[in-house]
Length: 166
Image 1 (spheres, rainbow, N blue to C red):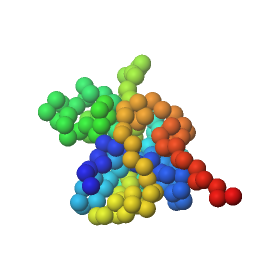
Image 2: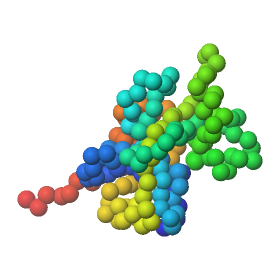
Image 3: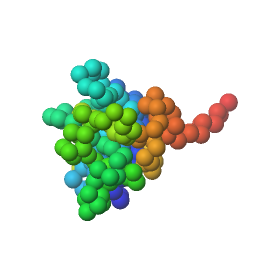
């Protein structure tokens, strides 16, 4: 299977999981060693920061992961490795410093995550084979501009009802 990095995993309606049900995961890495991504539509209950913190997954992570849409924050030589999908970049410590103390009237596009979603070798492929996830091409507008409560509904593929035998 080719890499799913830069794609969305969209939980199928049949995925009955307490955490992953009705989620959209942006895949950051995927290969023979496993997979790594961030749930986009789960917000943490945190009032300690001047921005929303999202729950990227059930796996614990010391610190934060930053995604942003500010191309000018990334050195041109680093863009290929920092870009997740067109217009979405993985932030570094310098990017994080900017969002902690923003200038008045900034119009930055970013999301901050605690935790992540991880799969061991072959685990995600097994879940895909069971029909737990749909793969959808990731777009910047969905990462930053779509309301979180609408994201899954906008991306989940329509399903064809099973015909009745009656």
